[in-house]
Amino acid sequence: MLLTAPLAHGPACDTPVVGIGWRHPHYAELLHTRPALGFIEVHSENFFAPGGAALAVLRQGREHYPVSLHGVGLSLGSALGVDEQHLSQLARLVQEIEPVHVSDHASFARAPLPGHAQPIHAADLLPVACTHEALTVMCANVQRVQERLQRPIAVENLSAYLEWAHADLPEAEFLAALAQRTGCQLLVDVNNLYVNAQNTRLRSGPSGDADADRAAALAQCRAWINTLPAASVAELHLAGHAHLGNIVIDDHGSRVCPEVWTLYQHAISRWGAVPTLIEWDTDVPPLSVLLDEAAQARHWMMQCSRATLGAAS
Image 1 (tube, rainbow, N blue to C red):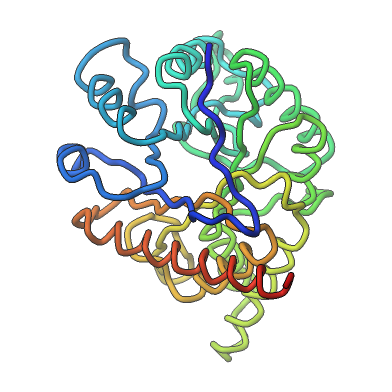
Image 2 (image 1 turned 45 degrees about the vertical axis):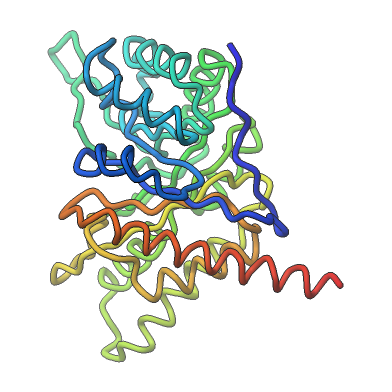
């Protein structure tokens, strides 16, 4: 099987690689207008069925753009291991599409149900406890997937709405160790970092000083970013989120907020011009809005590259 070369990136990347999540409302328009994009990303599970209209559309998209396959169902953190049927369907799709990236989340969804022969599936991305034991489980699952696909995968940090009391590793160290032990790559969702930092502040009780809380959340995210080595980061995600009283939800339903753009600039200053995706999954706007967000990411990538080249000269 001939695999498509990974998307190039680095501190001095001449052509910033920015893509968008390709969702159903934009299938026809994107194929008709073919805007200048570095890649498109789709949810793997939506194309598992052999044949049919969905896969036919994806094949058409693949004729014009590199495709990244982003999954939500591998349950890489499950102590039950990877579901073989799911992995077989993913392997078939990878062989068909030859994507530039294959990714999923540092989460679990499958667990045993007492009294039942079959495990229960939560149909959600549930956070794993960042412990050495959980790391061993996830390493085994990631290696199983990579052996089957014959390629590295990228693992994404999660937006989590709870914290495990018995965690004994910071999340960034957990993911760095995962990449080091398995050879996998990391997909860093910058919006998820900021969502988690805000929810941490809300759980501990806001200070009453909104500017101070914002600064503390940004500092927490920068420290997270500073932990990861550049070589392990293969892709970045940017999205919007929603404030719902005492919780912030990663709903992918709005433009990227100024704070996440600030963190994005910090990330690419540390890691270089990493291929970047604009995600938008709820209240999907006209395609032009996603392309505008992509142009903003491209702008900051170019600024980063110029600054890096200027410092080196």
